[in-house]
Length: 243
Image (cartoon, rainbow, N blue to C red; front, top):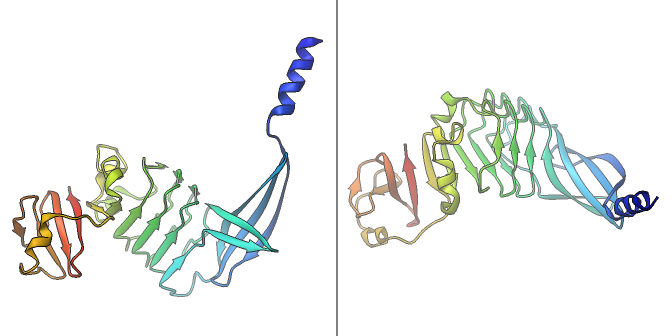
């Protein structure tokens, strides 16, 4: 009897899901969300999942997924992009906010014009075939560190070999290691501008819109294998790793 009473007391102390109410919500930019009210004892957690993009046949340039949405006066945090949500869309760039934890299967498959992807800090999982058929993809920025778990076919090896991966310098080493997925991109680029001695060679001739140097300040006509210092036309500098 004492054991049963103790077990019941422990269960009563655990947070338990009481109910989960849900409803649809459409934003003006054509993104449709499914809103969840997860009711816990003494707490309500509101999350929104991206389920569909209604403007997939329009060439809309950059699509920005909001970090939160408001429905009936309540704020919902966007945490999941569901499978096939943006499939066959014609936009050229997608911005995925910091609170998104999961991108599910084929979410951006066959987005033929998609050239630029930006993913925020809290991503934990990228599913199968997420970017399958996105043959124009060339720039992939991700702020998470360490890297999220990812399906081996989220981006094909052939496509990864053409993409520059951008990440903050403090986590960049996680990505250009020997990891079978993250370690085979074309190049690895710091997304944070850094002060370097290259600022002292502002009068060096530019190659296109960029100047490329090694750590000793020697200029190249184009980036070399290994660690490069890149000086942009606006004077900002950053590190780039070429494999």
